[in-house]
Image (cartoon, rainbow, N blue to C red; front, side):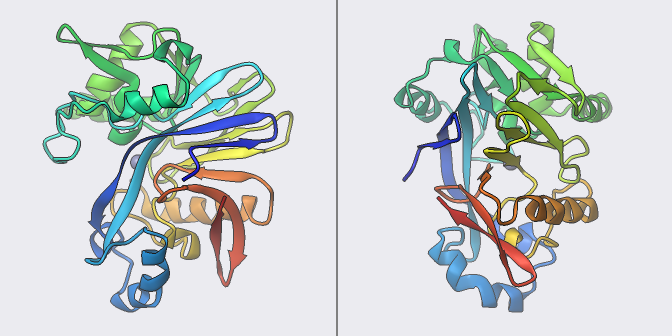
Length: 290
Ligand SMILES: [Zn+2]
């Protein structure tokens, strides 16, 4: 399994926290008919994206990108000690998998210059903070944490109505520690890192693109898609997309943008190796894994 690869002058590492069964395919994708699943079951199982009970298998991971200037962590995964009663595999877990994977890739928490979140869902912010003497403190002591302004405002409003635990324990403590930068979509880091607005899954969701100048050597897709089935059928939106119709439109235009280019598309949740190049297939696309 490839945990490290290069693209242009970038070195990219995958930091895997879990790769496991998630939700039944029909439950997660309400538009998936029994006939469509039957047609696609064989290749989905072969890709290890589906198990024998038609449950989707997802990878939960961060990426670390080394540019010539910075070390940037994208999406901080699930985290430890976080109360997540709705998800037994995540609830107050205390395993060392993530920190061990970070060390195995050759990094310590002090090496990260920037943490960037594609959006502020529970499995993308978890390691933003860790528990220290009963308080949530930033895990990466030297990092600036980059959150999209629109995404931050949306979750602030939700959290004001009823507490959103991942926002309260994994985002707000970073803001309170004055480590956060709330940025608009024209934000860039040097000549290498830019944001691509990809709304739908959440209102302020962004993909993050890397490459010198206008080149796009790699793009980090976050949750604009969760399973390879959605590359072939971009109209399939998971039930937890905030705006499913917009997410479907965003998904197709994203896939069209990168189709038949050399850009490596690094997905958050596709099964290992999770990253590949987008190619056309029928009326949809495939991600040809690297
Ligand atoms: Zn996710």
